Length: 323
Image (spheres, rainbow, N blue to C red):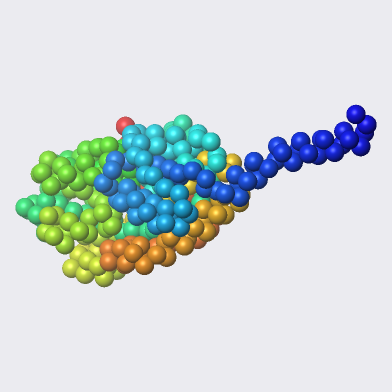
C-alpha cells in the first residue's frame, strides 16, 4: 500500500472510531438516568427527587429513575454515585447532610475533589414537630421542660450526622438544653415513630412536614429563620419565641462523580434549571415555603464548601459527639 492510500485508510479508520462517541455524546441521554437518593423513600429528599425526576423525564425524552440507597448518614449512596462511571447517567440527590458528613465523619470519598456539582435545587426552612398530644405547644415550652429534665426527651432523625440530627443538636445548644438522639435509616421512618408516639420530636424540612402540620397529624413548635412562611402562617419562628440565632436551612442539590464531560454537565444543568421552572414545581415549592434555587455548578460547589466549614465550627462550638 502506498503512503497516500495508507493515510486515507488511517483517516477513514479514525473517522469510524470517533463516530460512535460523537453520536452517543450528541444523543445524551441515550438511556435512563438514575437519581440516587441516599435516604429511605418517603422523606423530604426523596420527595424533591421524584418531583424533579418527573419533570426532567418530560424534558429529555428518557426515563429518570429514582433509586434509594440508604445507610451511614447518606454516605453509602454518595459513595456509590461518586465511584460510578462519570457519564452523567448516575447522579446523586444531595442535601445539607452531605457537607455535614464531610465535616463530622470520615466518608470513603473526598466530598469536594470527587464531586462534580450540577445544580442547587431548593432551600428549606426546618420545622420542629411533635405528636399532637404532646404537652408542649411552643418551642419555649419544650425549652423549659428540657432544662428541667435533661436527656428525657428524644428526637428522631435520618441517621447520625444527618441535617435533622446536627440541626437538632445545634438547636438544643442554642436552647441550653440536652436531648437524646434516636437515629433511623430515613426521615420517614423517624416521622412514623413520631406519629406512633415512640419518639418525642423530629426536626425536618417544611416540604416534608407541611401536609402533616396542616392536617393536624403533628404540631409544629417552631420554624428556623427570621420570618414566618406564607404556607404555614400560624407557625412562629424560634427567633420570635426568644430562641435567637437559629437559622439552619436544608438545601437539596444534584451532583455526580468527577469527570462527567463538560458538555453533559452543561446539558444537565440547563435542563434541570428549566425543569425547576415548571409551574407544578413552582407551585409545590410556593405552597410549602420552599425556595427554588437553580443556578450554576460553581454556585453549588460554593454552598458545599461553605457548609463544610460551618458545620465544623458548630460541632466544635456545641461540643457535639459523633458516635
